[in-house]
Image (cartoon, rainbow, N blue to C red):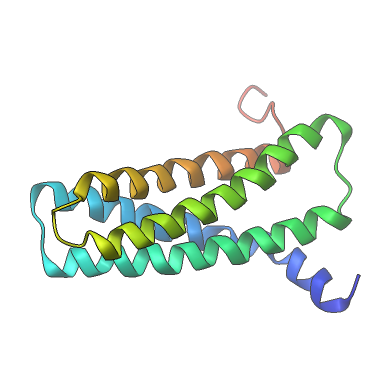
Length: 143
């Protein structure tokens, strides 16, 4: 491993918080738009999803590098595989949600936008949960 890939992989735990926060704030802004839409909220969702999608891709790349040279226990391998692939799916869906937010900034195709943004929030949550299981263990809450 080169210094860059080793370092970039090791900052994965720091990077994970950005896409989670950005995508969830976009989802909350989208919820607010249901009751009272505004140009500010429209642009906020577009920007938050765009930056959140980029952050998700960067975070997924660093996570793949980290997992290539970290020791993972045998009982965590399935969880890691799900976490890795859901991380990529999160980046893809967040990118699609960004496109949907740009295309349907008005209310003409709002259901597509709602589903994409809220789906990205759900997917980033599932991905984060699996990452937490890898770090803290499956019995974290039961001990």
